Image 1: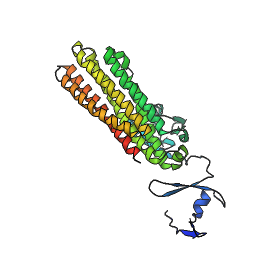
Image 2: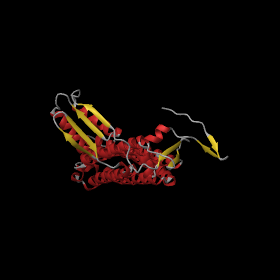
Image 3: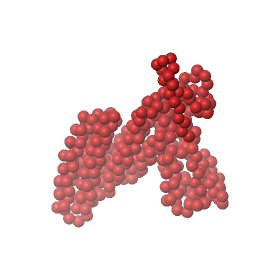
Image 4: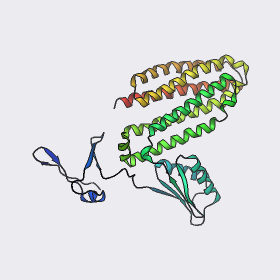
Length: 335
């Protein structure tokens, strides 16, 4: 409910407003208690009671009707949505008894999402809780981990092609799922920060920077998907000795693209717009080199031609996504 109050002047120089009595009492404030005033980017002013000793915002509970869901994929999507929305507790309840499908989906979901555990389960309900202390988890740290995972995926794919050894990428799908899990976690963290702005305040972060982590995270997740595409397609090239020259060019260009990717994320974390601008310039050259790979692929025949063309397009997309990250660095640095 909006409460409009008029500014008064006290002592001839200080501006003053009174605080709503109901809010002050609900926050446990009394006479002479200190409060923290924090200017916001939009020109508003946030007031934080200093007597709040790092307590988290009240836990939110999302309840899913286990009797109304018969599609396991739809149920899984609901669980993911509740997780990303930032609810601390997710309940699945049934009036008639939970089916084995529901319990299996819940178990699979908990094993996939980061920080969740089933704390109660019987025939009629399942309660899933988040055990992560959000105050100590910074989205930027999850971005750094995603960068390392994706960089290693890309490097291993290129090494597999260079050494003609597909065994180096047998676990690429599993590693991609780890990237997806971190993307979920970051999306969840952003929603939690937006719901409880005191978390960002305690971490010394601003909400704009936290929100931008979501854009970076999604871009990293898409680059991870291209690593999976590369791993799938390069098997045709590994088995075809006629593509050795193209293989060498793919590895050379790919290594440079991986370096560009790693550098672009580093510049975003440090908000170094000069290096970010260099990344964009390098990316433009790598996009041209990727086009040359595509021309070489068109000279091939059969499955190798199709695979090489898909690989050249994925290498190009990774370069373009890296340039996007560098552009976001410049935008962030202009705050």
